[in-house]
Length: 133
Image 1 (cartoon, one colour):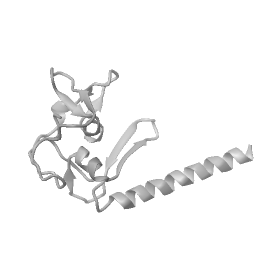
Image 2 (tube, rainbow, N blue to C red; image 1 turned 120 degrees about the vertical axis):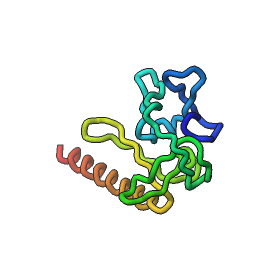
Image 3 (cartoon, one colour; image 1 turned 180 degrees about the vertical axis):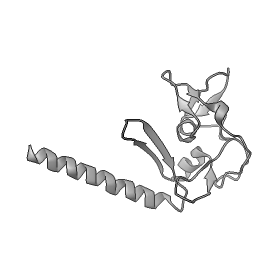
């Protein structure tokens, strides 16, 4: 993977370079990268490979992302977070654009519970609206 040291997993071809591959998880949860219409990972040139250590695997290779909780500085590879069972949230904003958020071990449970409550409230509201029709 062009963004992390892990060698196994689901990969996607990277744009602009023969033989470059990126884990699907790394591509989606790294803010600078995105998938093209063809499903190729683009935006790698904007990723800072600053050699910061991953708080999970300890390796200082590739690129790490920080927890999306306000004020949290834990940094890790997205695939390391997924493999550890941390919360990786995929949401859609008001304009229908995907948003990807990732949380450390300290914030995963709280954020997942918050999202589940919000989802349950939306379902309840939709059910009430359908019952009124």
